[in-house]
Length: 209
Ligand SMILES: Cc1cc2nc3c(=O)[nH]c(=O)nc-3n(C[C@H](O)[C@H](O)[C@H](O)COP(=O)(O)OP(=O)(O)OC[C@H]3O[C@@H](n4cnc5c(N)ncnc54)[C@H](O)[C@@H]3O)c2cc1C
Image 1 (tube, rainbow, N blue to C red):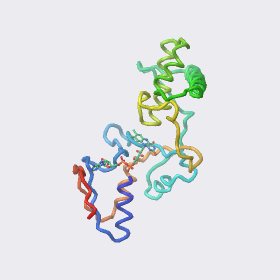
Image 2: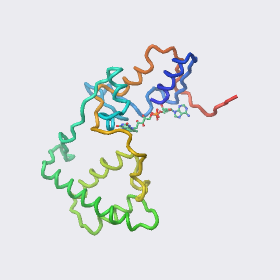
Image 3: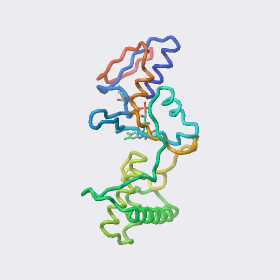
Image 4: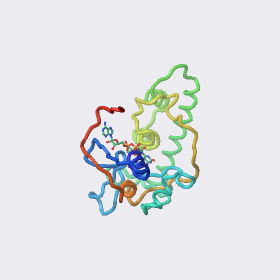
């Protein structure tokens, strides 16, 4: 995304541009699977966070006609691995338990003199709670989706003190879900540009001379 945007900007200013990409495809961490299902599935970035309130990706998607939908988190349906639906009540209970765990985690965080991993901190918090095996499974799912997925990092590699620190939110509003495939944004940015694209070329050195 950054490379395609820079290329477009440079071409617009009259430069001749070569994109050197290590992989065999463009898009980087924006990667749309267009073959497994009848519709595009983004397996890299898929959401426009705070897409309602100023996030420029929303207007870029509008400009390049990439389908976007308002995120409807309340429509979530979770399944056991044998295909049974998890009831609304079980899901709500899991949410409450997760909030309780995170509340206890916040209490622990305030007392930490030196950093430990988030994994160790959560273990410290949940151990005395004697969770049932279903509750443990639910919590693994909640923690995976709310924390690990959100920050794209394993709990053992995250700091209990600083894991959720981020630069102040510039944007506001609700999230949006990209339904038309994020790859179309990259293709849109690059379409019509005269660019030399070199795939499977790993940059090992930059000579500024
Ligand atoms: C699973 C996942 C889900 C995500 N979900 C979201 C989301 O919902 N919403 C959101 O806003 N963000 C999300 N992100 C983050 C988002 O994808 C990235 O912030 C964004 O794509 C970064 O774009 P970029 O151009 O800066 O970097 P990248 O997309 O990483 O592009 C860098 C490019 O440089 C190439 N490259 C690297 N080193 C070399 C080299 N030495 N030589 C040549 N080429 C090289 C890489 O192959 C890559 O194509 C997600 C990321 C992941 C992995």
